[in-house]
Image (tube, rainbow, N blue to C red; front, top):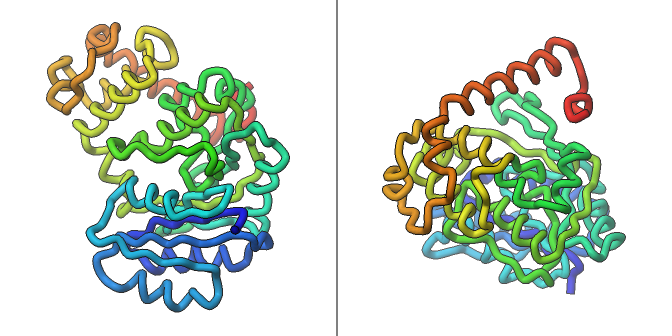
Length: 313
């Protein structure tokens, strides 16, 4: 059996997928299988997979009908034979030849860690311009151990492509979710085994483009309300306390939520958490606070030239 299963849930965009395959071909760590589960309605990804089967340890599965996100991710987990699993999005890529080796080493050296994660280089696909380097502060790393639910307010772990987890955890992605699906997975994993291995290098590149699920989800008010209240119920969040009050107040402002009735209309059927109505009434305050923080960060980071680590001190 291979030590690692790299699972790529594909949907169209064979050119981006080929970039991911090219990066996998350069990896120094070779004890892995590659599982490509394909939701693409035409044969473009299948044809690409056939071209690469002699170059990579690749298994291909066409999903008919298409499974969608995140069930396509879960199909890879079900097929995986490795002790470790990496859900590698088809439009992301490994930045270094030793990326897989460093992920595996981190889990080998920290047997109590349920997953390992690394920094992420986030770039605009159209220009290859770096948007930001996603990396946690020391404070956030401490919070991850003591209160993993803070990821719901800010995902400093990153996309699934930058997280390698143990198959023995027995976890799958929640098919109810699209926007918070990854942080929900991380929180459940850390509640089960409260230790993660952090790799302080950028090992994965993430391309931002208009065809991503994220691009459409962030404009879907009902979906966002449903998901934020679903995870609030699942993890028993107290919306009267920070950082949850600030995060939910910000979303109420951004989505212009004016009453609890809108949360019900979004499909949420659980109890409305205490403090929700007060956050809705005061949503403008959270919007102003958000823009104040963004302005301060812009001045420090862009105009004064401070490094990201300085902003966390």
